[in-house]
Image (tube, rainbow, N blue to C red; front, side, top):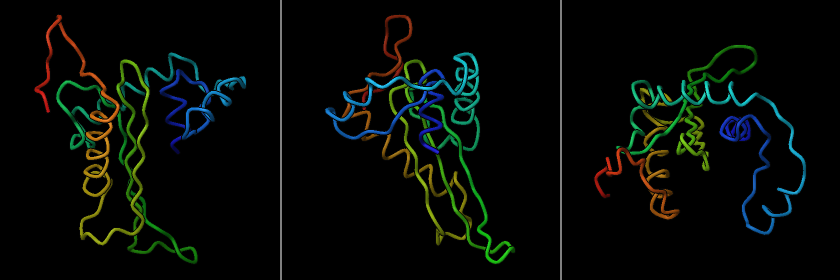
Length: 152
């Protein structure tokens, strides 16, 4: 799932997951497949940004940062029948104006009574994204040469 969202963030081109810089350098030498056109990728990211701005992913919104995301909640099946058990998820891409990071949170069988992607996975994703912003020194979106975000 994360690789699909990374491709959307990469203008439709395949992204191979990587951890270290030496592995990244070796992987980037291989030609990549294009799964989506740049226009389709941009449109989907805009839709996902609206999920964070005014939808089920609004709990991850951070003032001054453009974040795209999608919540997910699914029931688990056993022997062809649905159970009361769930899998809750949230995937985010940021910053939308220059995507560099994708974050995926999946919670298998949460114990919370009213468990959904928005109530279980989004709060975890927000903590990860806030840490990522600090660790990677991701600057806020600048508007009219002035910062539009309060310092954390």
